View 1: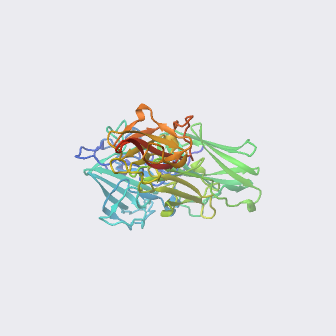
View 2: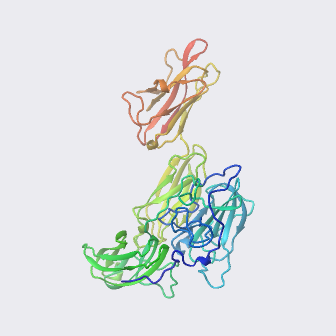
View 3: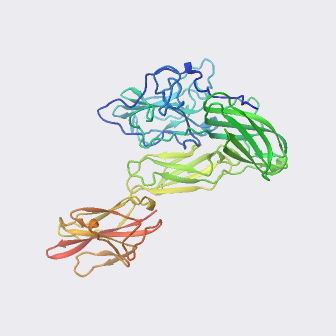
Length: 567
């Protein structure tokens, strides 16, 4: 049985004296007006992929052992911050952005403190930080930022989603992470709500907690470099080894390991047979976050695609592919694995921060050679670039946009030498409809009726509203839909119908509207043409409103029209 020797994090309950005691922390104190809830996580990346929230605020009374909002062991005694780790100093060097979670004003800032102190003797730095007043008594501190990454001054205003700096290691603790503290009326609070922290959550959608063992990263190398200082310093990486007996190093980070967790490693040959195995125990501790490395002597006796299987407590948590070649000349660098991207929320309003998230089959396997992947994010509104950054994070953020903006996010994954194909996601802020037949013929109010489409263009959300305005008071009307534009003056009407072909009428009793304004919610699964059909992504539909009028005699009229292409 083997026990990994290079533990880089304290076990639960250890070193409690290293943490500053704080008062009992609970829900937000009472206040005259409630501040806005946090709409997104303040660090670029995806939780439990390239980000790991390794500690929460200690919500227990002073004294060991401490405890978190979920009544688990993920808060050491006296911890005051939500602590979110990134993988290594390699990611820190490339850059992982930190964002303002709400609008606010900078009230304090410090930069210039060194990174990577690694708990060195005599260290006294408090780290670089930005302190923001978010209004209504809510203040947040963004701590331990990277040296030289802050470009703000006291008194500056910031928007939610604006970059404040980069994740760093500018404190006397080991490793790169963001410390995030929340205060209401100068009282420390825990923004998460749960069994051990009563009251409402301070998140719009509270991020999930993962209490199952998981792999944060797992890398392969032939040997560490001379003088290697261990995690979180980066190490040589490879996804290809030479056939024969090898010194096979693994470097890893694991999260939330239960007490007395066992491990097993299995080297599977290309033909599916077992080539080698090792097993052992992590010992009698609960580990919030465990880093380590180990050297195994393995005979790689066959060329081709091998797999290293990683089991924790008899459950396979990771499968790591690697190549074995006959000679060193067969070792080549390969580009990162393909990715997809998605912008969230899918149906944003003008109040929403936009997040572009990288997705692939397995975030631990983002590169076949286990290289650190950097992502170039190019955000555009229309054809105008509004943000262009390269980071080591699997997501990026831009502040809220204006109604009708067409926003794209292009992402290119690279290992610094080779790139994967560029991919793109796009959304509209609100409904990006195109008005036509405008202005309509004026009605008896001397104004032209108008139509507005709102809600969401994503068909799967089925959240689409039509509104007609500037209609004659008390006169009834109904909306029309079709997939072909037209231009015709029907007999007996003073207006122009701007649809043709198979025209649907929303004229059920619940869909009849009355002037001067009226709205209906459109069921995108059944547009009332003949026969009714569902809207599909990529379809373009045209909408208009017909209404009765008395101008001066009995007649009818139409609003202008709007075209919408659904996603």
